Length: 134
Image 1 (tube, rainbow, N blue to C red):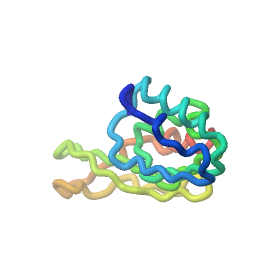
Image 2: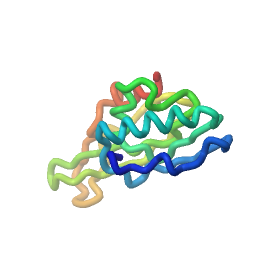
Image 3: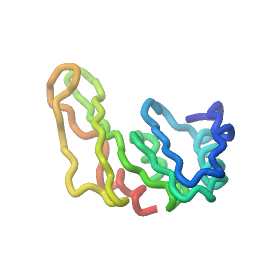
Image 4: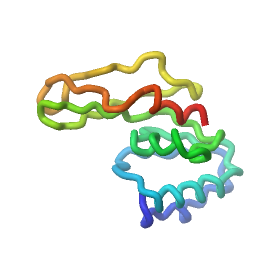
């Protein structure tokens, strides 16, 4: 998400429920954040916005930037990054979120998809799930 993101063309203000899938989002910069915030507040009339496959880079921003995920935005799933030191590959695992509550457990490691070595969770869950408090 950057200065070229074209969020204004999504005409959703008259909808009651909007679903957004962020799968494939690879980066977020300050220009993209500004566009997202403007768009998110412009659609305040939408009762519910559900987000699937929310990537870690987006949620790191949401954890520190108040208003990035307004109360009517419901993150249903996140994509957790796991890094393998053996082959330097990042493996992602989808995690379902229920009722805006952090999961009680998150797998600290899993097999690397590339070399099958141990891939370690590449985020701090205590910080990562702060977006649920905003």
